[in-house]
Image 1 (cartoon, helix red, strand yellow):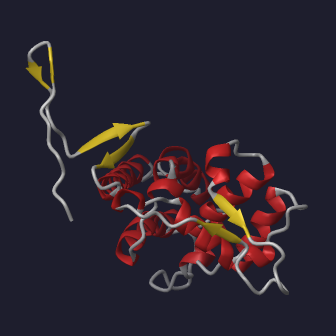
Image 2 (image 1 turned 180 degrees about the horizontal axis):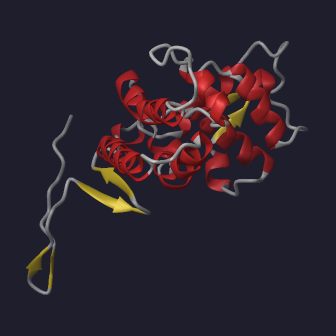
Amino acid sequence: SSLPVRVDYSIHGVTVERTPCIRDLFVLLDHRLTFKDYQDYVISKGNQLLGLLRKATVDFTDPVTIKAVFCRIIRPVLEYCYVVWCPSTVTAINRLKSIQWRLTRYAIRLLPWPDRSQMPPYRSRCLLLGLEPLSVTLAQCLFVAGMFSGAINSPVLLANIGIYAPRVLRSGPLLHAARRRTSSGLPDPMLPMCEVFNCYSDVFDFNVSLPVFKEALRLSIVH
């Protein structure tokens, strides 16, 4: 690949400092648009806040109260612009999910378990606390469905999504997103969003509401 053209810019004689990433709407953008820097930031920030939560709630005895603090302070950090910067590697996904995984163990630690070393699995702990598991699949599908329903008003993004019609016995993919032909376009989050949505398009219906679709997704997605 060709080397990037580097030009030094200056304002009133002062050279503008070159930086490998910038912050836009609180999200870190690197020069390759991989979002790795922001993923690392979110995971680090989430772990830091989880540590503070545990110190602040050490005397709490109600798991639901601890869950409420988590949902108010930490979960918004983990989910902000999730469909844009969401990690694609298993390692990064597990690092992100481990924050809520540890929160659920901490929140229910004081319940009268017969054997505290044998707590319920993560999914059961989430159900017990009324806490929805972190799921990029759910977020991606709901984002696409939101554009179709008009809940998300983005004509530019919607114009880049093609719909295959007619579909023979619903066996083929529903959506088609044009592949990017430049290296800068490869990280486009719309591509994986459409691919994931196609995997669950059988439970989508243009005539149902987003809450109904969300509930159907919850039953279909294996976390």
